[in-house]
Length: 99
Image 1: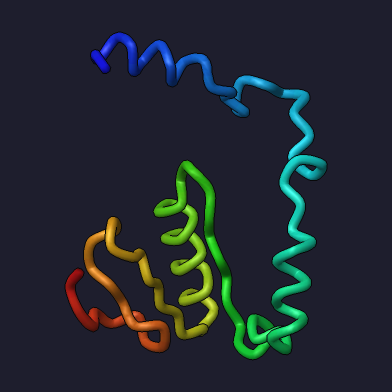
Image 2: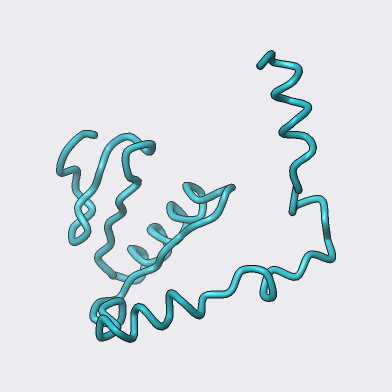
């Protein structure tokens, strides 16, 4: 496949950002995930966490939330995963290892 064929294919895919009337709540349901968490005893409720997800601005949002929480004397930490570079601990926010 050539570069032009690949870009033509990708440009045919739906770009949800360009569809202002797209109904996310109808298309992306979490019923199965909620059922799974219920079966597992809702482990996500066992500790306070903020999960920042999406395709854009995750780093900025995470940094803003980190600064906001630290300004109010909360201990924070982030795990930016393999693509984000340095990993941090979840308790103190101090560097723990490099990916």
